[in-house]
Amino acid sequence: MSSTTGSLSLVYSTQEIAHNIEELATKINALYQGKNVAVICVLKGAFMFFADCVKHFTFSPTIDFIRITSYGSSSTRNNDILLTKDIEISIQNKHVLIFEDIVDTGHSAQFLLEYFRNRGALDVKIATLLNKTNRREIDVTIHFSCFTLEDGFLVGYGLDYAEKYRELPCIYSMNEDIKNTR
Ligand code: IMP
Ligand code: MG
Image (cartoon, rainbow, N blue to C red; front, side, top):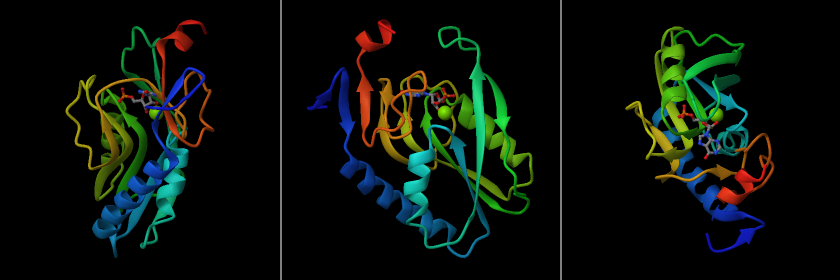
């Protein structure tokens, strides 16, 4: 929040991210020790969070990737969600932990929870890097989150705006002026 890069304002530093991920992994380790677990990364936004978190696991899960997109323009978002890349492993009788970048309205999280429940998982939980609370429309249970905030549009550390900024190692908030001039 104090330092800026162009029109991006730093919100969470690499140190804060690493610290909170380690804390999160400790809780995840405690819950899943000795269980048959599949951890699923939701592409693309969760890729850095996922990679950094799994390094701390003291259990040995199977790992896979899924991709969903919501269609309708962002201004008239109609919450229709399309699966564009499916997982390639069986999750029958497994404990599934989904890794999301952001839970905002809650529609994507709800879709994913139902999707995996319907495919025979023993139980399904969500870990999210960011839990954004102000625009929530679905009262979805977020089992694990690294950071909770009310609002703002964030980029970096996997999160994009129009496919940009995913490579940045920290999380920034985007000022309205950049969005409006693009
Ligand atoms: P929702 O919870 O279904 O509204 O959707 C959450 C998804 O919207 C996230 O997985 C992101 O892909 C995207 N999203 C929401 N807020 C932001 C943000 O601040 N920055 C980047 N992407 C966002
Ligand atoms: Mg997403």
